[in-house]
Amino acid sequence: MQWYIDRLDELKKAKPLYSVCGDDCAVCPRYLAQTDDELHQTAVFWHQVGWRDRVVSNEEIRCRGCGSRKSCAFMLLPCLQEKGLDQCADCSEHPCGKIRRMLTQSAEKESQCRKACGDDHMFALLKRAFYEKERNLQLKI
Image (cartoon, rainbow, N blue to C red; front, side, top):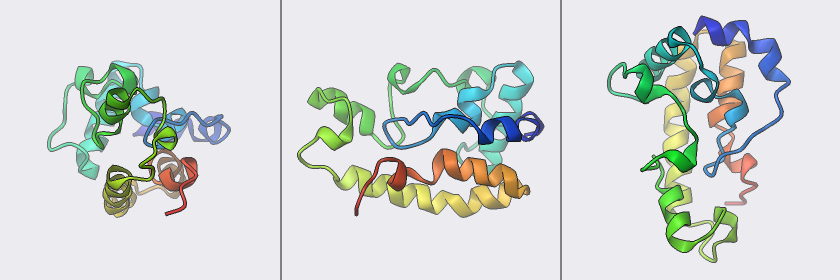
């Protein structure tokens, strides 16, 4: 994703913006991609990493924020909505099986992401974006 690599220095300074699952949206390519080319490069990368089974359309890869999605890859958002909570830490069952599964699934994808990157600096930002959930959510599991 050349557009992402071109912004590495700027992104390293980005103030964190954590999602419900602990991803850092401030450095997430899906969240940041704006142009058709950026969205397409992101969709191609998502397929290379294995986060999608095919290169999806720009419309499908475009991030509109967690609250706008009907589903959540980790099923955390529907759970929060069902319980009327703002964050998982407010739940009496926290950390629950959904959180543990999320951390396991995320860890399983990290090596695939590293392999698809090819650039250490890019991977460092993607690690910050997707693979520091436990720290970002300040979990002690």
